[in-house]
Image (cartoon, rainbow, N blue to C red; front, side):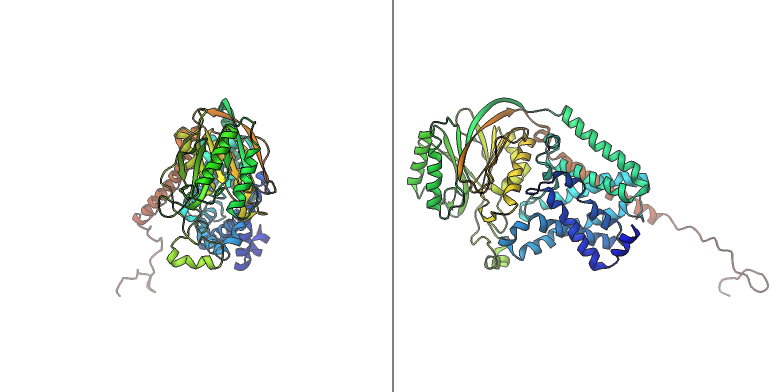
Length: 527
């Protein structure tokens, strides 16, 4: 470690190393999807921050690592945002500065007050994951880009992890992943904390095993046949509609219960184009199923552009409509457009802000089936799918379009989020896109049928199992976040009381013998 410390003595080398270390977790996300790597990916970043010479430098290491993490996880946005991606990464990366400071405090060689030895090691496994959840909570706000790239999302294909998600959502997975990284970092570098590190790893394994054994499993009590229509990359709304119509006709005679088109599958308001509504209604009659389309257009009944999920039956639109509530910053609106409107000249930022919906909707599509639609970006928000499950949705539907990011890791990463939403809620989820990746997951988050990749222009019918009951996550909500905030609040109160105690305790009198004169008599003050 001494050689490592000497190499990092240069501020520039340390900064570059922190940026690269912060970027490492990206390989645990799709498309590489090295889920196991997430459990050690933070270790280099932790080792850098713990060796910082000062708390300020550790905070800067946290900031640099946060910058690297945000750029890496969102690198596919570079063609759309250009220089903005680095600006946003620098702003959001600052959220990890306190995490870096806490890393040095609890893992460093020079404790900055508080517990030491094994006690400090146990505290690190509790405090550092809590601080990470605090960062994820803040950046999950829609105005800051939303919860894309939450560390727990790397575990979307691991069955025990999905069971944990049903207990505490993706938040619990993030906490677990960071806790394991902290324990591994202690095993590598903090000798006096190796025993608590091993104990922490054993506790994580025990918690996962307990969740696997005792958490309620979704009880499959039915099924539904859902068809996903994926037209592929087609330029122009008329040509896209024609392709979707032709693909949907292939479903005649396949006894489907619902047909789902992707986001922006209809480029005209149906009030202005009743001919399109009639054509979809004809498809509904011929297939025997309602068709859920997504309209991206200026509305004829009120001002503004909306993205709306609209259900169309044999007689036309049923009146069931959901307007997208959480919009993509810069992609669908520009925050503070009066100041940042120039972004439209350097990237693919929205030329005009879209309008938001006001409430979530659960639609009745017949056959006793109730579905909860989400549009694109919204599938990243665990609270939205949880509320739909609370409101009685039997099936979650995500309508998406990643056509701007073909050839990147974004489509696969987006498709993976549906597995987590399904596991969290105990409800199956269909992720239907215009250009891939489309995917379907059962109520335990397990994959149902094959993915439709970005090269596919086709339709596919999925036999989706239905399950009911309430998962602990739906019942109790984001309790891991509340617990993390309680841990951080307790730490702050403890530090405050300790500082107050030091201020009130008078310093001890110095034990210095009084000076004597040449005649060996005590010196008298003032003489």
